[in-house]
Amino acid sequence: MRFATLKLALITATIALGVLTWMQFGGPLRANPPLQTSSRDAGDTVQAKIARAMSAGPAEVASSAKIVDTDARGNAVVLREGTNGFTCMPGNPKAIGEPPMRVDAASLQWFADAKAHKPRPTNTVPGITYMLAGATQRSDSDPNDKTSTPIEVGPHWMIMWPFDPKATGLPTTHKATGAYIMWAGSPYAHVHVMGRP
Image (cartoon, rainbow, N blue to C red; front, top):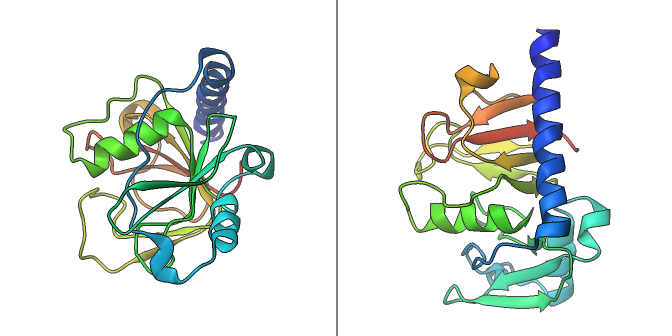
């Protein structure tokens, strides 16, 4: 078990380092922000939306990340420009599956593809997504589940890339600690890591 945990840690660190290096030297991918329900429904001020969006990831990333919300029609509204290739979104605290999040360009593409119900994500490098303020979701196994009882999820981060549970040795069910493959068996399977990086 320790070897499998060490192997996962090395794989995760290698991928994360590669993504961060790509972002710093290769430039961001171009993608539209994922469409979330407008957080205007929460009655928040712009400052409250920015604070909620920034709560989703590490402070060192938040300071120069772009912050984007959506209007009632689903159009992107930039609340603050950014310079580091990450985009933060305040989400909608009244909606299940729309938490505050911080994503890099590859994750932005991944979420846009999922929202558009594309057969598979089109990002060409792994993406990093932070949801350090926690989240609610419907299912760990079905990306299209809209009816199951909501699951509360604590702070976590994800690697948005098609991981195979058999190759990684990771479980496919929700865990309060450690890592697992969420939505295993679907083209949108990805590594879900509980806790803070």
